[in-house]
Length: 181
Image (cartoon, rainbow, N blue to C red):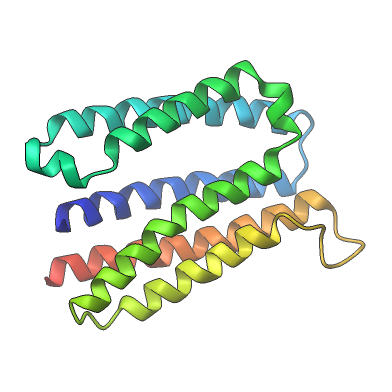
């Protein structure tokens, strides 16, 4: 379980950095950025899905029962394929997809924090709170900007940056705490 938490934290750091870059570019409102970004994300998801399936196959029988690598791999591979093939459809759903990804990304953090609470780890509350705040930012992405004169790209970029900064902090906490155990 400890190794899974470490791997998840490392993967989260990479994803957070990629999404931070995405958010900064989104906020600068580059021309044709959204369709290109969807295609790039599609390829990333396909690669991530294939790697997750290989990680599942690499585990032994008992470890395969408790990991989500196969399920995650299949879903990401299918989503990546859809992102590439149906780019125009997804272009209109970017906000929903980013929000859904933030929900997915942080739901496992809530579970990890509650597992840590059961083992009397002191940092569970920080991880739990950061995950809940990130989920709240994902939820806010589904609604128009609070400030009426704020461009949508700036609003989405800001929420992505905030949620991914929290994810970076959570991941670093998890990596540091797994070294102590």
